[in-house]
Length: 324
Image (cartoon, rainbow, N blue to C red; front, top):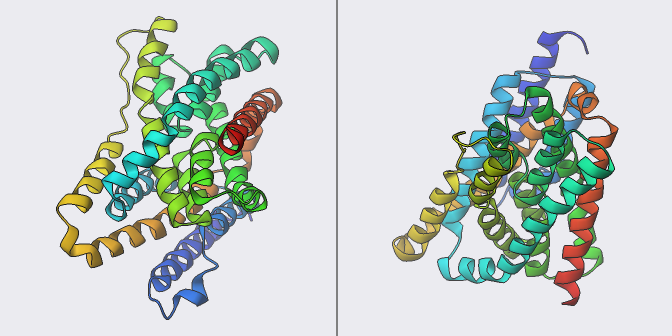
């Protein structure tokens, strides 16, 4: 498909179909007919479109995926309880601290010293894997003065692995008979980007979604101290750090839902449900951005670094969760 107008029309048609299907699925009587529109399928449709057709409305696609993800996460907060969230966050805190520091260190050694990946690219891939994927790369990139190519390669590597994780992690969880809490904790630690973590959690179950979201957003706060330490290591003090403010709005939504909106659960339920549906649409936008030019930019060595680091963090965190 080389005709850009035709590509744009296909893109619009897919967005409309997914959006209408998701809205229809919110009605109990229609839900069974649209249950096939779930996070993995939405991401898969985006990937197929990007690889077969190419780019369509790249600026809109990028902005929509970012904003819709943030609003979706905030909306999920209206379906959560402070006490349960604190319990879930506390259980995953030890894993978070150890895995963030360990992943950053091991990733940089594998990338820069073993595979000879460019220093800044290697650090960005490690930061994205350690914290929260694209958001961490977007925050740390300006601090280390990364150029456009280094940012693109790092983001491409992380997004490719995110897509794979969303498909395979729920199957591995069921195969190992993991509990909802175990899987949610594992997904939050071993999957890079917040969108794929929440998508995998939603595919596994309601409790897994809550645990995964809470731990992942707690983990995402590490952007701030990591960026500060990075500015010292790369001697780039004074660079602006991008703070993920939507996390604080998510916390506010959880607090409001627990203490002030107890009598409005019927409405907050619909807000949380709409948030889950919009997250599914977000994954289509993310998949649609992985066109062939992004894949070509990544290269073998950065991708190999990402895969090796991903395997290490996935296997080690899984073993810790299942057997310790």
